[in-house]
Length: 244
Image (cartoon, rainbow, N blue to C red):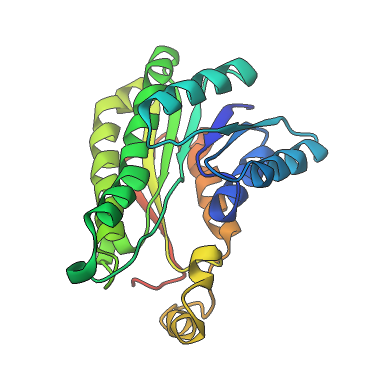
């Protein structure tokens, strides 16, 4: 069944793969971006070239007014949001002793506050229709922690607690709420780690490779589908065995 899906931070990396994957599954996709309109339009054009329906919508999803405009624009362009993927995220890594308050606050704002704002903004429509899928992209850092990522790990751990709480609130209304927690995935973020760090990550991963954005997108596509109605409040780890 065709549903309206909103992917925040959908212009590149994991978000791009999620948007393309949902479109292949028949969803009408809103690709949200913050600073790269040309990248979002590229995703939209790829979806349309394959016969799908998509729009690009710019908004800083850590800003409440911007989120309100985003949801209205998606509603006008495609229809009410039925599948929300909270993918927007940033890192500002550094050891805690040297971490600035600005670096802490910005990561919490983008990674956690945006999930709260977007989820709240779509909730009324989902409750009215008695159907919805809310999927937040977490991280194995939120499960196990990671040196130099106190802010990032805290934000992702908080998303898990947020997800479990909301899942209990709305489960009886046909709405599922889950987290997909990737390990090391081939993205711009991991490209900045350096060769030695990447080799260490691969050696610690049971399958012996970095993940691909499409690996994460496949988990999201399942959770967004009609057959995942009995899966809620869960953390689906997509890490190639890194945390086992």
